[in-house]
Image (cartoon, rainbow, N blue to C red; front, side, top):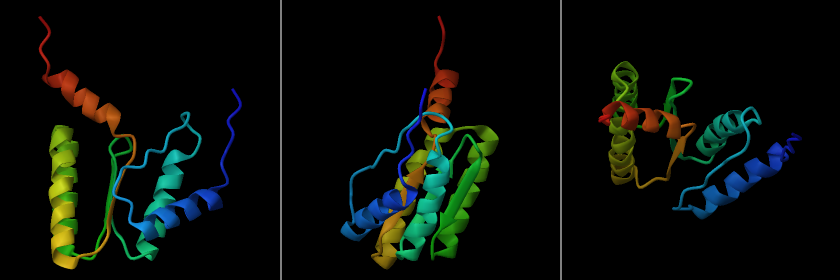
Length: 135
């Protein structure tokens, strides 16, 4: 299979365009394994911070969670939730908590917030499988 890579600079300019327009809908980045999605999303975190965004980044498969935010208590709460989630693997909790944290950041600063969730479908599916009963 041939994998065609998109020019990373073009993709980052698209992120900047979305950021300047304050898009409210989810943007999905997809492609085959190993094509650079995670590297691109991590670059996006940096680019959004340069554009004065608060950014929450979740990558449960790599066990990486970042809170690039201006509010130390929100950052601490997010990272504490991440540690707790990594310990007990209740992924739904952190997914729901992110909504509350975004709401709190917006309430305090009236600033833009981005949530970047990388490879989250598998951990959420694992949670579902662990909690379902087989008859």
